[in-house]
Image 1 (cartoon, rainbow, N blue to C red):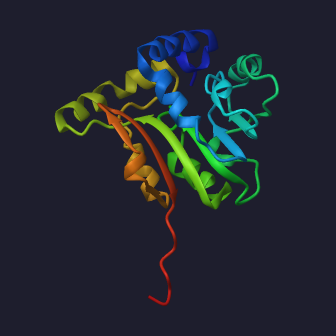
Image 2 (cartoon, one colour):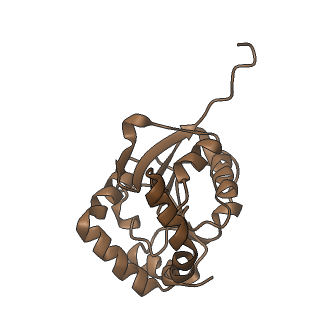
Amino acid sequence: MRGIEHIPWLYDALMSVMDVTGFARWRRKLVGTVENRILEVGCGTGRNLPLYPAGSAVIALDPDLGALRRARRRSPHTPLVVARSEALPFPPDHFQTVVSGLVFCSVRDPDAGLAEIRRVLHPGGQLRMIEHVRHNHPALARIQDGVQPAWTWVTGGCHPNRDTEATVERAGFTIDPADRVARGVMRRFSARITPDPDPQS
């Protein structure tokens, strides 16, 4: 399915408006204190890439080759990979940080994508995300449900009614309440792999 998300210049124009209205601060917070060996999943046109701390070892991934061409212009030295989050071409426990910004609303199989992130993330590593989520108010959530089919078609995959935080926790992560910010339907948070229960307890 192709839509706004797959037209790089148009998607960039919309993101520029969001950045001017305050989203740029969230981006900087998302990547500003990351640990090395970083994977950015769904990097799109690469708007986050110039914001990483100097010397960060970042690999960026997206399924859309057109978006990656634009990302290459923004960050010429960052390794870029064409792949989907549901099939990450990396070994287990490889990354200290995985970053995802406005991605899991569009991932075809969010559970599979988060399972892959859990696989490639070091047990002591961190997942950092910005997402929009299902509204807490039932009436507004029903409106999201109603507009979802048309919205998904126009955007090329975005689902406005996904409860991504719940999906993250279901995938075996624990969200850090001290590093979670909620503004309306927007969320910025970090999470770590939930330790397995102690079999002796």
